[in-house]
Image 1 (cartoon, rainbow, N blue to C red):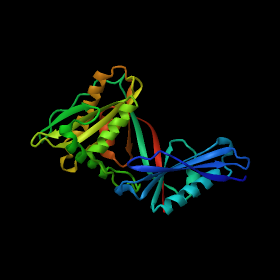
Image 2: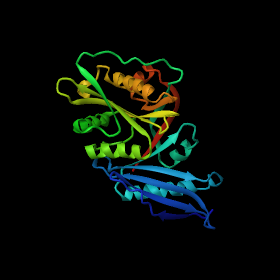
Image 3: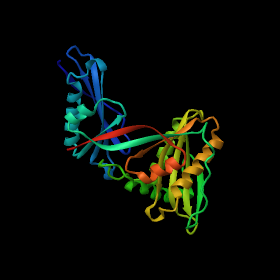
Image 4: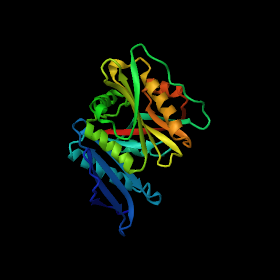
Length: 290
């Protein structure tokens, strides 16, 4: 089959990434597939690109996907990228295809759900060896905690990510508020619980949770992290338990909470299991090193 690849104009540029898009058409000009390549622009991730390819079911196994992948990977290399990743849902039959294109599985994510309708109230654990207090807020971080929160956000840089060359994400107050603004513009609710050292008021950990606009369905955990010097005191479990308790009170019609954790992040997976989260499925990231 004759395939023509056309580069499209994509205006989906942000402060932290830009995107390239291609359309594949057959000899009669009918669209048969697309590819998009997210090029991260932060210094800590300027080596990385994220690829998504879609081919019409009737046109699969005819070389369309391979052409789109070749085009996108070539563009990534020309832009100086050293790794391209592809996210794959559990049960998607693309492993052989990605392997043929030079990709290999680099990360397994375990997805889990806490059933809020059938589970018992989660009790927030008591104090730890060192004094910490929990604080909570909705939406954007309060001014008095903003700088400390941006610093704590960097605790996720050493989060286990399999063999993906993920790099580091640069966080500052403006970026934190931009994320909160995006959630607000979608009409959703962003809730954050943080651990603060009682000695100096600095933030040492956080957990974020996003709830649908109408307070029904399932909420989604965004991120949980504790600064290295403060790990081992049960803070991740304390923060998540408090977030669950607050969510129950504020959104009584919510059905459940969803989370995903890297396979090698055994500490967080144990926390989730202890809090009542049960496995639902897996997803994967495949990586091609250029």
